[in-house]
Length: 208
Ligand SMILES: Cc1cc2nc3c(=O)[nH]c(=O)nc-3n(C[C@H](O)[C@H](O)[C@H](O)COP(=O)(O)O)c2cc1C
Image (cartoon, rainbow, N blue to C red; front, side, top):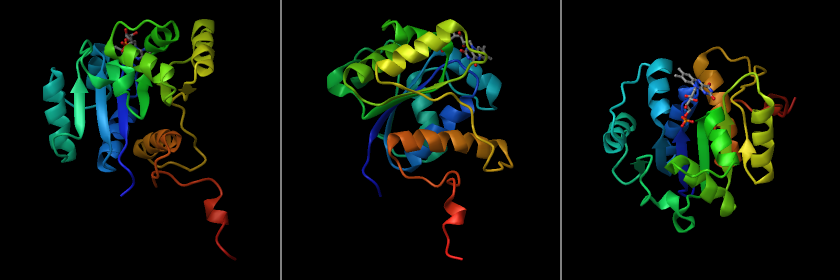
């Protein structure tokens, strides 16, 4: 098995909860440790985008996912939005990388302006100051000038903006395949191996 990494994963209240949930599943199944954070709007959107019935409190959510993905205690930690004692609140406890998936325009703006009034914003601020990868899987369309400026600002600060727009050249036959296209892109950025989606040109490499 590949080296175990620690990844901070944040779900915010943008549509596309499937991308975040699948990212969580793949990271856990690969054996990585995940620090999960979830905004209140994210919990609302998960209820609208999926059939999942999540419990309300962070530790209950942790147990829910441990059971769902068949993982042992100690691999997944779910933190409350004001749990300032969580490792991700400080540079000394920063994860190897942070992924915000899906990311709202609101969270994008809060991070771009340096507001750290919830644990997701603070963990992102910490990732940037510690020069750790920060992947922002934004979901909004169309973009206003404010969104575009915030994306540029975060890019200059070291983040990677990767809007949730899967490609169709792999001829996806299902929503799951579209979701895996994006999750594969996230794993590529994290430097993690996967076979979630075919790679461009691979089928033309075989000898004649
Ligand atoms: C069903 C639903 C879907 C939403 N989809 C989006 C979205 O795709 N993008 C976005 O930026 N905000 C979206 N919002 C609005 C955000 O949830 C709202 O701005 C919220 O305050 C964001 O807070 P958060 O970033 O802390 O999660 C949606 C809200 C609901 C209820």
